[in-house]
Amino acid sequence: MVLARNNRERDEGEKDTVLTHRDDDKYWRGGLVYINLEDHSLMVPRRFGLGWTRNFGNPRSAMLLDGAAGAPASGE
Image 1 (cartoon, helix red, strand yellow):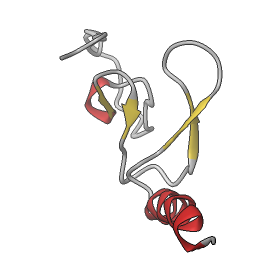
Image 2: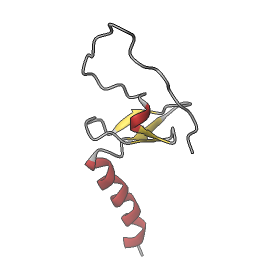
Image 3: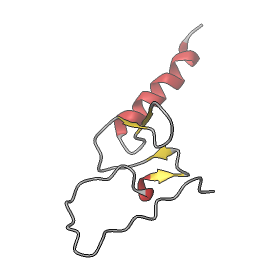
């Protein structure tokens, strides 16, 4: 299910700057989950609305998620 789609393609003659465009559809799953292995940012602005979301392509984000899920399990 795709909630949003960006159909922007480079204009004719537009140079490839090799910069990461965080709004590119290939990095967003369903428009809500950001996964980009080449982007070293831990948090990125949400695509819609206010706030931030994690870059799930960053290994530190997975460690943070594992630590948060494991903390309540280890408490008594």
